Image (cartoon, rainbow, N blue to C red; front, side, top):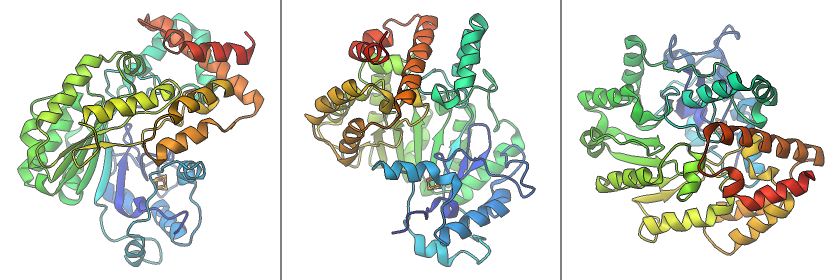
Length: 421
Ligand code: SF4
């Protein structure tokens, strides 16, 4: 089995919240235009413009030749650590047959992930300006009170916050009529598997316009649509379109049980989340599915067994066609959100607790990773100090009901011991 080939450059379109085009949601590389200077941007370019560009053709040639691609480093790394990655070799032989020697792929992609900007009502702990303008706004406001803190956050980069530019700016690349219709037309004609993310898609009018457009074209029946939502908002309009789809999934972004998810996905409310889940359960019929997609991270890893137990209970005891679970939202960056930076003593204690419960292989892999020291002593010190500084300041600004120290007292003690403070 190839260790570098992936179906995405052959069968997938991806539009980032800022309109830039990439191979998929995992990579952090925007695709350059043929002058190698500008970037493809949904505001100016169509999907057809980038599909057989110089860079896309080069990527396909390299993958077919068995060479590694720099855009795919995250997948390679996740696989080395025994984790699930998005890379897939399914259909590899056919994709290769349909590719010309120069890397041109003559068919259109049939799968797509579209990120409808960064309008969001939450400021999740692992999030940043790129995915939530509210998160960016808050970081900016803290910085106005405390310029030293903001300067430090920017210096820290992906250690504490993945995106610190353009704070508070709303990304709305889909607003122009021409851009919107080009994108909707491509999706309606070619895409059979679509993932829609925001920001929070259910807050964005164009999300509903896309459904209406495809409904008018009569193409909903060909589509399998996944909606990634934080469950803080539902809209009865969806009951018109979801039954007409071939299949649909809700990927439920819930990161803990009760007050823990309220803290991580601030300022969500647990009762609203439960009501939204019931809203979707009531319209599941034969073509719907609800999949829990927790962003597994340092702030909820100690609750992972409780999250799985709660979910299985909510699903009626087992996963099946209607109810699923995915690990794909596991948080790797910012690094202070990754459980690997916690003190060894605390990680081993959590691993012991989680080991008392059995779920699936990914669950086992996460436990094994907790037992492994992954950083130098200096890096541990740097990340642990940064974790405390970032979260203390954010908690203070938010005036949260319970701080991270109150929600995870044993982690607080372990960090102080590790840092000798
Ligand atoms: S290998 Fe990973 S990063 Fe590269 S295109 Fe595939 S899914 Fe995306």
